[in-house]
Image 1: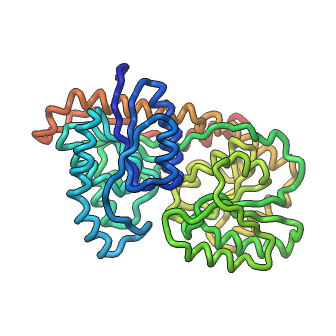
Image 2: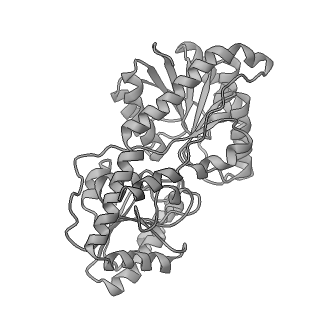
Image 3: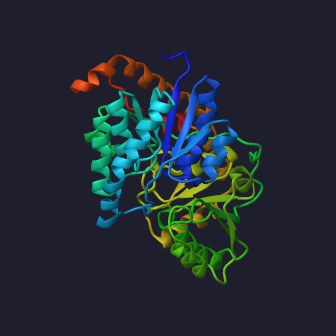
Length: 407
């Protein structure tokens, strides 16, 4: 393990505060506490830059085009390749100026140019993947870049990691960790009536399905109140306007983007996570666990890795609006004693697997090991020889089992 100071270049593709960017902000204090010197390279100024600078870290802007989120048409892929050389050169210059010991890439979009620059400079690279790559061309580009740089990979869940198994010889599954915060709901006093969804307003997050399910629930529980917390971040606002239109005439409040998720959760009695199949595990679920708020979620993407139906939360039986509404009403009809048991098990699961301290320690350990190995195998990069120790994959199944067994 490295005990001395380490200069880390953190490369991020977005400057708005999505889940991946919030996870990076969670890590920076742990980097600084270890005497490491992180600096940020990002495409544009924004809230992420502001937060990083408040921590006393430097920020650097990368000159490149803006790309649409999600599926990329051929025209955008062509533009990306025209940016590749320029981005790689900019990252190379940052490696030289800041005397970087390790590159930490917080997202797939900038991985190829960062990997090329790291390979040429002989600097170890760690790629942190927060979402599943569904477009084949994006996966091939990211996977080959990871292989080129002999990089380590951290995945936020097994679902996200699975497509990379053909490219990454070693990776770690490290689930997001969150702080407890001051708003923990120690008692559940009534059946859930304040119901909300939290996250950036995009199709993959399922706010439209939430509104349509709310319409069904209100027919049976007219005293229910629904809230949508979030804003469009990485895409145009077309989907947002569709959600607003669908909510007209319903008791649905749009609360906008909120930085203090703990405070938001303190006003909710039930969190709904209607995310589609491209979702990872979404950090709002462990945030709800820590806050003492029960969770209803679609069994999509990586969500079943951290939500066990009837034990730590409530999974919808199938991914349809009708099934979502029915599962919400199932929870509303449950005796309070049963809801309390689920919330208590979820809180214990957060304590075992999703604390901020655990998350920081696990990620920092990967970076330390990567930097230490880099000092050994860096001379072999020129010949393409790989001299790394295999990292074991961390499995999620014992986590859920431990929470259930401790009941």
